[in-house]
Amino acid sequence: NGALDNASGTAALLEMALVAQDENNLIRAEQLSAQFLNRWPSDKRVPEIFLHQGQLFRQMGLNSLAFAKFYSVMTAALAVKNDQLEYYQKLVLEAQMEIAETHYQSGHFNDAADFFSRLLKQNNPALNRQEIQFRFIRSLQATGNHTETAAQATDFLALTTRLSAPLGDGEIRRLRQEAATAIAAGRFAEADKSLAQAELHAIGGSTDLSVLPLERRLLIGENRADRASLS
Image (cartoon, rainbow, N blue to C red; front, top):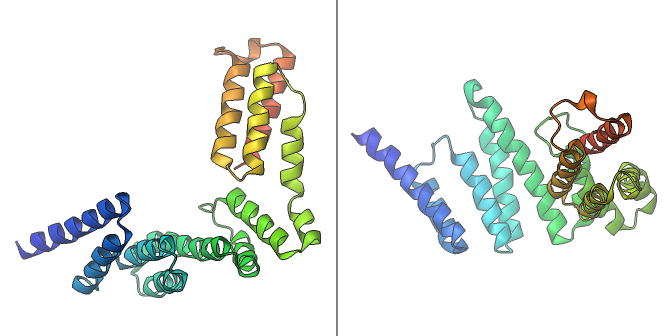
């Protein structure tokens, strides 16, 4: 019964913290997270709570405290058991991305560029490489490093140029231009959605692409290649 009560207590406290955050009551959410850590300092979810606290502190504009919590995620993850290793490696990666993002949002673009560069060197499939590359380029641009900015932005410029070129009918052109605009603003999920809609429009309800005219199949292939560039 004691174990059951303990489990229900931790779940209830975490749920209350999430509700408080959803209601934008950030101070209350942080207080509940701190209460959780005080009551259950050995809980396996402690690194996750640290990550959550860091995000809360950043939302409150307390970046020094946010950094401390993100680094605490990495420290706490050092003591994990092997059967939990993959999960905590994911948390550590998230903490590293949050550190880079906090520097970026704070206008510390030299530090942001450094951290985004380190992330891009990791061969981790969980990384959203396009989002990170975009922020890396923006950080380089903000530091006045125009040579490196141009070098890193080549792929993005090539993709947006292709998307802006005339291809297909008016609806496909409109959707591809929407994708180009979204990419320029760093909204990659939105760009992917527009390209997916362009492909569906090009297919036109056909269940067998081989019956489509060659020109239409080539258009679909080119659109798919551009969409793949976002992943």
